[in-house]
Image (cartoon, rainbow, N blue to C red; front, side):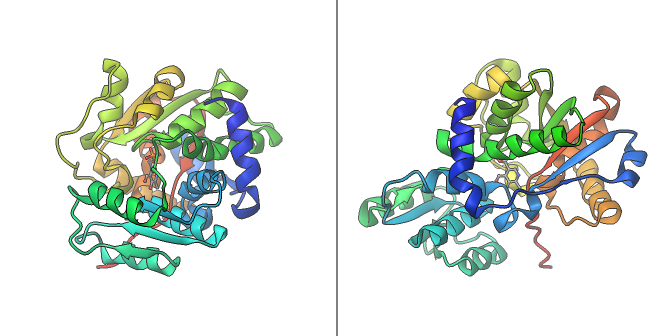
Length: 310
Ligand SMILES: Cc1ncc(COP(=O)(O)O)c(C=O)c1O
């Protein structure tokens, strides 16, 4: 995946996505002793950057009959939105026990949720069978070059917005699940601002990407990690993102659940932004590893779909 494919993705998706703002907060900067640039993807269509990748892929398909995804999270909302833009149906394969809040959110975007008899184990099989039956296009959440390029468009925007203000980000901090987002962002950053560091952030109990980069092979977690950051509970990074990460990501930081909660609280109280736990991972890294980090930092606030149900 090269820079040109990111610009091509931006050309496809720009009419249907927001150029989200790059926020700053003097209060937060003073508190953290840093200069922070906050890329506000929680204000993106569907409430997360996932709309970028889903649209980038969907708009490159030739007359798809419908779209299919295996997800109950932000990717599901992205695919539901992409289907609406294309004027086709979206089918989402979701485990029966997934949160009713998430199922309702997907239905609100006009998607059909398939959950009867679906478990975390059989959902891929169910999706394959549905794909054969319906002929709909399956959109992977991260292991796809067009999806990664779509996510990378947030990086193109971030660098342009920082440049316009005359600010040079010494490092960009990005949450890592399957690795699609960081692979896209790193492609933008290493092409346009090669001396800027690209750092991933994971919860301590889900640090498979950190270990994978250290060991030079994809490390799989044995079971779904317990963390507040539900967007990054993936067991392993994808093969295609990992190839890009090995070449272009400078390191991955792991953060505690306490730092994560504190980061969410700070974003809410100091900047009045509603950011979901996964989106607050970069600020948690500043809280916990600040002394090792440079002064001017861009943080990818990747999503805002917080579950407020009791
Ligand atoms: C809010 C949020 N941030 C980050 C990620 C991680 O993205 P990726 O799987 O591309 O690494 C996700 C994935 O669902 C997410 O929902």
